[in-house]
Length: 64
Figure 1 (cartoon, rainbow, N blue to C red):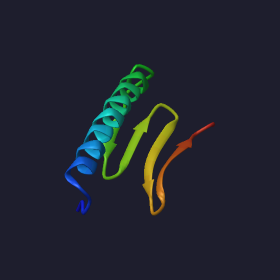
Figure 2 (tube, rainbow, N blue to C red):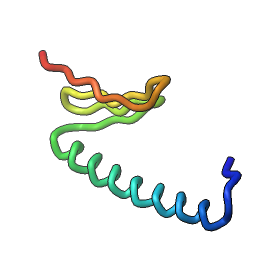
Figure 3 (cartoon, rainbow, N blue to C red):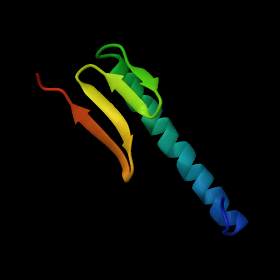
């Protein structure tokens, strides 16, 4: 829950929208390499899994 000023909330909302647009663009690029699935805090694509960890997000690559 946000506890700052309305202006701060608006700035954060705008920044979140910008980041979301960038992420969507990157996921579209990833999707062009092969199928991408998302489920339960995990995004899986060709030779990569992006997953949620206790400290943030990480990308694991499969180099086999």
